Length: 443
Image 1 (cartoon, rainbow, N blue to C red):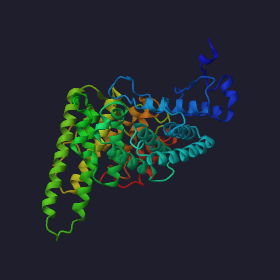
Image 2: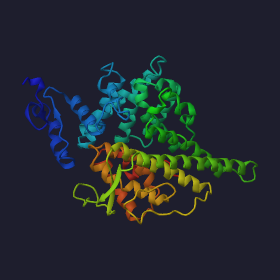
Image 3: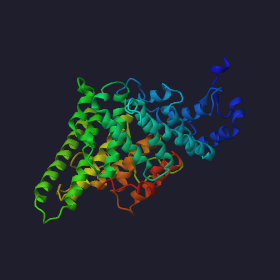
Image 4: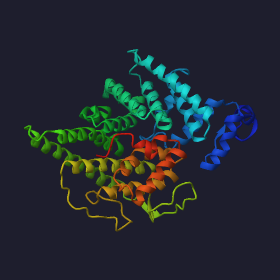
């Protein structure tokens, strides 16, 4: 076997001799965190390749079928950049180096990642000043990398939000037609999710609520829209609902027009709920056996706090798991907004007395929906590869936590889970203290 084709563990051979500080940190950290997550590298790989391989292996390998409409095919832009020293490459190196350093408690790499981050920001500013390059797809990919880096390093409490706002401005300037094919189409799901979250935190109406953004990217192929695409259609309406709610609250009762506007906002909230409930019913019809309950086996021996639930929700497909927690997150925000608008949605017909059933539309209150999110945590942290499940949970956990009683057993357990997303999986933004720096996203 040729030397270039030989694959060795990081704990073996010449690679261990070439960079002791980097290599020696790997087996200890991996043994403590995920004994099944061994990294195999070519002995001629350098530090950059090791870090990038580690990043892709932990965050971007949960897509089982590259041909699937769900597959994050835009990752290929990172792995095969047009310019090996350009913005995309520098942003990827910054993220990969920082993430490796954070997960493996390697401060030298964290500092190196910070230097690469600074270089990437300078390169980003230069590209934004060039009209011919400001709307390129690889610019969006680079900013997604930088936003993800901020979720790991949290250099400033709102830096991740600034990157999301940058994504929004670039995407709006590009227009929906640039997202009909290629990298633009592959990026759209990630973009809509990031941009909607940014506008939700700001509680400002989002340009993505315009019907053109819900149709033009799929023009001539509407049948290719996935369940998460339709859910994102609703997700992008939520910032406008929150802005309208704030306007109602701030409206002086003595100024005419408030009651008429309140009625409009209430109707909009009810319409959004109806769309959500219809989506959930269709999801259940299309995937009747995809989610089910199993006994909780988490005793705390695997680094996770002991579960407060006797049963947890398991899935046959990671895409369905992601769809359910996004649905629950959006539903929680809308339900709380409806309460703020004074809507009486009637008494909840609780299904929690029968733990073998998932929550169905109009069947649950906010606490029950939040607990449903909690009961998916075991699946996301055990079944999805490496840290991708923790990455998916960041926003849903944030929303669910705000809908639990602060001193309840579930809330205290969730605080420990949030610490796990930071300490083991590297996402410092997931820590409860850091998540609370953002504005209340569930009001």
